[in-house]
Length: 321
Image 1: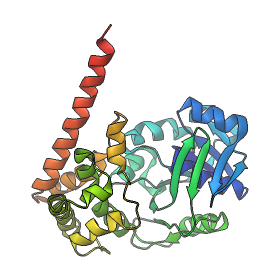
Image 2 (image 1 turned 180 degrees about the vertical axis):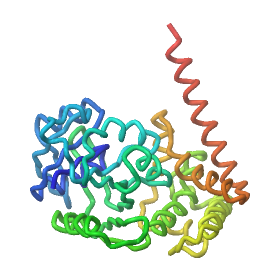
Image 3 (image 1 turned 90 degrees about the vertical axis):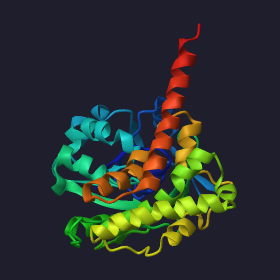
Image 4 (image 1 turned 135 degrees about the vertical axis):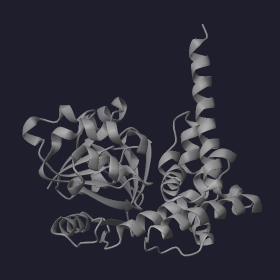
């Protein structure tokens, strides 16, 4: 199968590397020049269960650098940051052919609409990945794939031939995968978990171990998840999480004391967060339904405030002689 990983960072390299090692025709796309140069020069170094192996891969910074004869992809897996989705799929448009499936494995809610507007909703599949990926140097990734689920599905719940083909493809590459008849429920379950902790961690600057020692943090996190739960139920979405406290508890399950939420890591790098596709997505859906979400409104505003402050500080620093 001809596959493009759009956003070959840590997770993209972990998944793309497993598919490449299984003999699939994979292109890794990452706009970071150092990452792509390392991948081109020595291949992808994958650390699996403590052992490094080199996987030959093909990597480019831009889809335009993929040769024309290679551009009709069977599958495009989207793993870029949420706020880069529109720009990424625009540059990948020449790769989309008549039978191309576009699979989002991104966190949050709203990417599928953006992708559908760009390539047609009939081409878009949704999914979630629980594979672990840690980039320790350009072109060198720690891949946690053992017993880590990937869940994919059609929005209408059909067990379509293309979903079954991707499920089989992942299994053959050593990636656990399940075709779900309730992918919206899977998406919202993970959204509830992210809603409960991501913004709080970003605003407090706390590791999970420290965050979970604060009763006040738990109260706010559970309240945010409760609002998201109400929005999902109003849409008739079938959920696995039925109590907002479950979302708070599940967020830290199996994670080390020093774990940092991705939103906190983004702020520490001085970059944008994915707040608009997590708490912001809850707020947007709630407004459409006429549901009040004061806790998520507050978290959204506060994280946006931090982003604006960091951007202002960066501009001030750049302006100094």
